Image: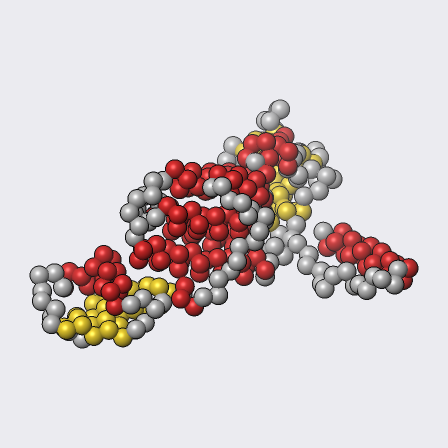
Length: 312
């Protein structure tokens, strides 16, 4: 808890000041800029009719309102969720959870449940769900690894690169600001983007580069899975944090598609696409395209990063 963390802070400050006093080559006076205290992992408490504490493994939940002891089926009194402690026996053996779900799933659940400064309500179901999602991540990596190159679609590839790059920025920022639950929520969105494009004509090389970026960002959360996936893709820089691109061309913008001056669609596209690229996006993805079918385009008015207006 907080007291435990504060004492470690005091020990560290004491030793640093002592070393600084004895060795003039050491210029560090304070070892840390600040203390960030994490929330506790909490669990329900259980007592039998004799007021004795019970372990979670000692009880059986028949329903939400009916909890009994496993051995004699006597009634169990369910108490509020409190910080896990040996005295109240509301602890979960991490070895058991790791054996059943893997260390990465346990880490993923704890970090995703709530902001790091808040308490975490332990849930076996939550760990199970984390395990299932990480299995999906592995399957996605395997699908990309065995994907055939196919025909390169530069427009679609650039759009995916743009979207992933935006998420990389957000995840990197969330990690730096200790918003781990926010970062994990973003990983779910990234998974959907990549999953939706695995079986399209997006080039394998571009998908691989993007999944490598994402797996590097997952290393602090799920190191075992992330390194295994990076090895699967033959990544030689698994120990290097990805370079976060500052190129404005990766920004997404709202782009209006007009027919005879009337707006028929608003597209979300990569910044600075030229007229020919916009035409291709309109043809493939815009609902405005149906108004252009079998029509003669007399004139096209294109304003960069704003609108394209087809006069028919």
